[in-house]
Image (cartoon, rainbow, N blue to C red; front, top):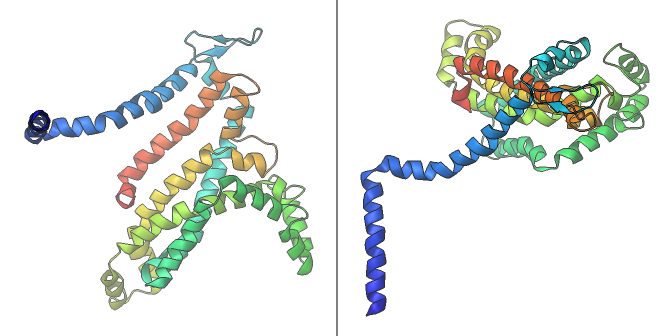
Length: 313
């Protein structure tokens, strides 16, 4: 009897709680969202705020200690020639990687959206997603071996009697180097390989939404395939391209592992942050450097939202 009374009492409490949540659905939603909101607010936003706060401090040149006084001198250091070159180098690489990913991804995504059916489409998704399943570091080190002076690309160039072409490319100023694995070209190739799935999928999703009768109507009105592409397909696929560029641009902007393993010793923003907060111990300047990609991506996301890129994410 006592067990039945206890069960009935517990059931009554649960029923009353259920009635309260049913009468106030917003309260129930708030309780569900409270843990993740606290996590985001305290851990993520809180750490960003602490980072931003550090950027307004400075480093004492003599003692090497952080001076906890509000100053803009750390941001002024970003305007020095060496630091501006790091920012410009990183933004240029991010823009070039994004452009290359878009050019390579578009025909692949177009084929998948327009012609791939059944097992062909399944194979497409498998081929695009499979590189994401393997280790990030393993892929980079594999590319380092491929691009090395004794790597497969050099071997193929010798076999095809194209060593002169490879040597000419490596002799190019700025982007060349002793081998592809120690050049900006190698860094660029690895970035494109790593991030291109993030460009293919949004473009493919955008092209899936382009009605086929739009293309047929364009052809019926006498438009050539080139005109149809520029006036119908590309404008409707543009939000997908911009959505993909959000990933490729931002990921390249903040990455430090790829240029550390593949490339020359010149710093990118991620490498500078890693070096400054680690070896150099200049946390304020490292924090100021991290604000740069955050500001760039803030403007970029605002522009992308205005162009409807978030509709295909």
